Length: 156
Image 1: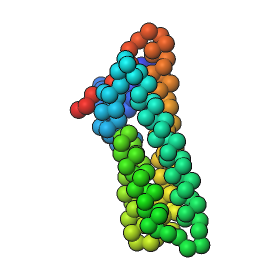
Image 2: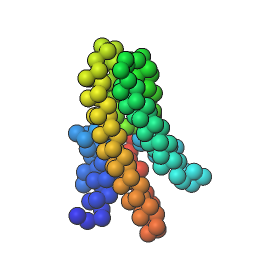
Image 3: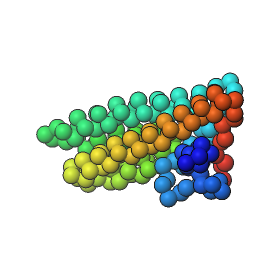
């Protein structure tokens, strides 16, 4: 696969520049973050994303501990999931956010089995979006090192 095709695929674009919506890893919020990055803060997006993953790892570990208790405090679980949902929405991690919505429904129903399933699924989605974004940032660094300019996804 050519460098250009790899870049388009990593950016979530087809050859014609159309967004790949069926994967849905990122939504328009990620594009908004990209538009906030400028020459005065060239690492803005990667720094925000890095903070998200640090925070999400902490929240996922706390969720595991809370769900592992003999008597589960579903309000505490819901509070952690709510925080994860908000932070995932703020970087545009759409699939993580969507799993958090289902997770919160399980909390409302005091459904331990459902919560455990959602925890496993949200871990997987975090892992997948992290890999996609890591690949994107690596490609951006390669482009910059070669003297190129990094394309930004359009807001449309």
